[in-house]
Image (tube, rainbow, N blue to C red; front, side, top):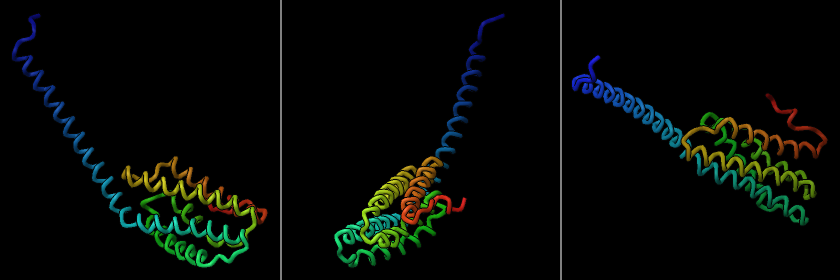
Length: 188
């Protein structure tokens, strides 16, 4: 059995080079497709980010101010009206991003109810628990939206489950005021 000839070595080397070229071409195509998908996701979110940010902040800040003022036996002033306006804006944008950000529908819906929910406490200290749950939910929503935009992908299943649990905790904090479990009222 004779050794490897120059012609055979050249043939093997050219076969390896061709296989590497095809592999690189496939990797580049998949990478370009992924980059285009990420860019498209960011483009969809970009127009909604300012409204989301200001609405979420307005709802939560208004709820906190309303609760704080009512605890001090003061009128809520414009805080309740401003929070309700922010909630209305959040309701609208929630419908527009429903499919781009799966898993945020129920958490955003819960946040839109915050001003009305906290106003019913009328300054009672038990409202502090609801405020804490709403703040935690708001932080998770903000973090999830930020990560989704940065990665250029919708929220992961893990993030969606975490948001759902935080929304249920907030609804339960609200529902416990009336002696009921709000999580059982959610539709599957």
